[in-house]
Each structure stands twice: as structure tokens, then as C-alpha cells.
Amino acid sequence: MFKDITLGQYVPGDSFLHKLDPRTKIMLMIAYIVAVFLVQRIEIFALVIIFTVAVTLLSKVSITYLFKALKPMKFLLPLMFLMNLFLIKTGDLLVEWWIFKIYSDGLKNAFFIVLRLATLVAGTSLLTLTTTPIALTDGLEKLLSPLKVIKFPAHELAMMMTIALRFIPTLIEEADKIMKAQLARGADFESGNVFKRAKAMLPILIPLFVNSFRRADELAMAMESRCYHGGNGRTRMRVLCFTWRDLVAVLVMAALIAAIVISQKLIPAVF
Amino acid sequence: MPIIVEKLTHTYMPGTENEHVAVDNVSLTINEGEFFGIIGHTGSGKSTFIQHLNGLVQPTSGKVTVDGFDMSDKKQRQKGRALVGMVFQYPDYQLFDSTVLDDVAFGPKNLGQSEEEAKKSAAEAMKTVGLDPELFGEKSPFELSGGEKRRAALAGIIAMKPKYLVLDEPMAGLDPSGRRDVVATIDALRRELGCTVIMVSHSMEDVARSAERIAVLNEGKLYALGTPDEIFSKTQELIDMGLDAPQTARLAEALRQKGCDVPESIYTNERFIEWFRGLKHV
Ligand SMILES: Nc1ncnc2c1ncn2[C@@H]1O[C@H](COP(=O)(O)OP(=O)(O)OP(=O)(O)O)[C@@H](O)[C@H]1O
Ligand SMILES: [Mg+2]
Image (tube, rainbow over all chains, first blue to last red; front, side):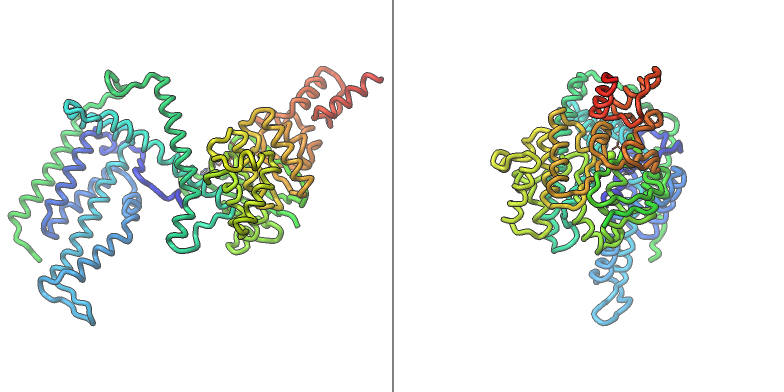
């Protein structure tokens, strides 16, 4: 039950994308989100889709991982689609059947929203698919470190994220074991209404929390006994550095954004 | 009626690069009233194997029947599960309620007993494992020591009065007196309730002393199955497998290698002493 979660999963490889500096990748992801939101017309979305597919191919990550990333949205996406389809009442009336009326703006918007969400999720999940969690938090720490002058705890935040990511699999495994232990005592997680089921989760959640607190305590002790005292004066074993690849990647992303802006200005609307 | 395991195979994460055959084509029968020991090195599939006895994991292929209930069938599994009590390797995975008594009563309540009946079963079970209900009943399970936690966890299962008691390394992490207590508790259970006990252990001494039959797992396969006499006469084979033999068996083996004629059936302290006494008379 808990084994299917693929949050922040990393797929090892040595593609162009894997070799990019994590700082570049984080910045590019933000740029990508901006690019997706810049698109105002549905036909321009072709650019984003082509880009996303090209980058996926470049990363050599199997496309099934992208579908897996979209899986948690299997209810949200159709719901958004249907709501937009039926609730928007502007534009030309296209179809009328019983109480349902579909207008042209509704149809356009429905596709638009779904495409936007799907490309956002698929594109951003490429970041975690091609970057180890450690590199990711390292990059984040570096990017946020200028904020240290205003007392922003960049290092602490990055350390917290590293620890959290590190313990996700442990927690999943532990939840699995606790669930088995309670099942063996006749606990029933599957029948009854929502409240009953929520209450049935208590025997899992309490040991999970208690063990987590204990582990956090032990981890803190272990870190302190190895003289950890925060980020001041800490050096790194792997120092991040930019290469020609990062320059290429930034230029490509700039080209995408330029293409979106220009084509939106120049090409007249089709639909 | 016994527990019958037929050609049981369990594969973790099939179809991925992490595929791992944890239990490989194991067939055996565990008889009623028996003390059945399971030994094997770390990662040999012991925990995976015993979780099948309770239907907590499903076989990749093969079949487990408990008193005729097929554990792969959803309806029959519920009935089978009520017969098999399973105590996990770590008590921290199951203790959750605000008091020890409530926690121990969780199982009986799930079996449909009323609040009062459940508390009564819980108090009885606590006595059986040597936790005084007066003293420990109102304590939080998280305040207990490691050994007390393990006994509370054991009580939580015993309170459900299972016919088969499955124990996954019940002695791990206990001090010698804690170990003795747990051993004494298990012995008492067998005497008083006539429980069938299936015990996984890394401690050859414990298995040698108590088990009537022993299964040796090696890399998921059933390597040997037999009485302690049969298993521990192969001291050298066990050691080659990365396992250990009881200390006494090792001593006997060492003596044999020095040319001393020690019979192979000597692997417990009692028998060794008996044999040694016999020697002096000669
Ligand atoms: N949930 C799981 N997912 C994937 N592999 C697993 C899982 N649980 C166990 N394994 C693997 O299956 C094998 C058998 O594990 P199991 O826990 O049954 O061993 P064990 O004999 O109980 O070991 P130990 O003596 O250390 O408790 C191990 O190699 C382990 O890595
Ligand atoms: Mg185990």
C-alpha cells in the first residue's frame, strides 16, 4: 500500500540533464514554470510540449516515470477538465444535450488547464528524476545563501530537506511494518465509514510518530557527537561548478521563452 | 490440524532491477502442539517466511493453509489469521495506546470482545508474561524498558489466545535475565495453553534447548529440516553457512577434532554434563 509512492524519485544516469549543475536546473525549472504560464493561447502550447518531450528524450529517463508522476492527478485532471467544460458559459454554443451545454470557451479552457497542469508536473518532475536529493539541496542552499545577510537560515533549511528526503523511504518501510503488526492483532483498516477508518489509522500513526521523534533525537545526538554545529565554516567535498553545459541549457531555455513571447505576438490566433 | 506450506515462493519487487527471491520453493508442515524453530543467517528469508503463516504477505506462488483455511483467500484468511498470533521482531512497531492495559486489550477487542472482557483477557495475558497488571497496567507503553516493551507486545498477542504463536526473534536485544524471562514465558504458555510455537531465532542455544523440530533456511531455500539431534550433528555445515552451532556443540566438535570421542548428539549443557559425569565413572 505504501510501497507505490515515488515521491522525489531519482533515476541514475549520465545524460546531459544529469550532468547539469543543480543550481542551473533549479533556476531552469522556475523559468520553465514561467514559460508555461506565459502561454496564453492553446496552439502555442505545442512549443512547450515539444520542449518537454525533447528534454525527456535527452534525459534518457523512461517516459513511464513521467506518467507515474502524473498518476496522483488521475482524478484531479479529469475533474478540472469536466468543470471547465461545463461551467464556462461564454463563446459559441457548440453542443447542447439535456441539461449539458458546451461552449467554445469552455472547451478551449478545459484543454488549456489540463495541458498546463500536465506539462507543469511532467516538466518539473524531470528535475527530481535527474538530480540526486543531495545535489538538489546543495544547489538550493547555494542559491539561497545570498539571503544569509538578512539572517535567512539557508543552510539549516537545506539540511532539514536533506534529512527529510533521506527518511522518506525509512518512514514508508516503517509504516508498512507497523501496519502488518496491527493487522496481526486483528486491526481492520478497510471497512467502515470515513471516521471509523480515520480512527483505525491511529494504531499506525502513533507508533510512527513516536519512533520518528526517537529517531530525530538519536540523529541529533549522532550529528552533535560528530561535531556538527551548523553551516558556519563548513566546506564541501564536492564543490559545485558551472560548465559549458549550463550555458547551453540556459540559452535553450531563453530561446524557448523568446519563441513563446514572439509567436504569441506575431502569429494570429487560430481558434 | 496443522499448518501446511506447499512450494512457497516469495519474490520482492518482481519485474524491477531490485527483484529479490526471499523465499524459494519451501514446503513443510508444522504440527499442532509442536515447538518449531527456524534458523538461518541474516537475510535468509525467515521473517518473510513467517509472515506468510499469518497472511500478512501473499505468496508469489505456492500455498499456505492454516487448519484448512487457505491464506490466499480473503475470507478464509480472516479466520486463519485469528488462529495465528504473530509477535514481531521489534515491539516499537505495535505499542500505541495510552496505557499498557489498553494496548494489550487492543487485540481481544478486535476479536469482538466487550471492553470488560478484553481488559480481563489483557490482565491475564500480562500476568502470563510476568508484567503485574497492578503495577504496569496504567503506565504508558512508551515508559517501559526494552524488555518490558517486548513482554507487553507478547502479552498483546497472547491475550488473543492464538492457537499458533509465531515469534520473530523474541530474545533479540534483551539482557540475560530478560531472555530467561521470555523463555520461561514461552515454556509456560506451552504448558498451560498447549500453544504451538514457531520461533525464529539467531540464538542456537535457545533453539537447541526448546525446539522439537528445526528448519534451516539458506538464501530463501529450505536447507535442512529435522530434529535438533539431526540439525546440530552437522555443526561444521552450519558454521560454513555463516550460522553458528550452540556453544556446547562447538566445544564437542573441538574435542572431537582433538581426538576425543564425544557423541554427536551432545549439543546442550545438560547432555554434556551427563556425558561428562559418565566419563568420570569409567
Ligand atoms: N519489504 C521488502 N522489500 C524488498 N526486499 C525485502 C523486503 N523485506 C525483505 N527483503 C529482502 O528479502 C530478504 C529476506 O529478508 P527477511 O527479512 O525475510 O530476512 P531474515 O531472514 O528475517 O533476516 P534477519 O535475520 O536479518 O531478520 C533480504 O535479502 C531482504 O533484503
Ligand atoms: Mg527477520
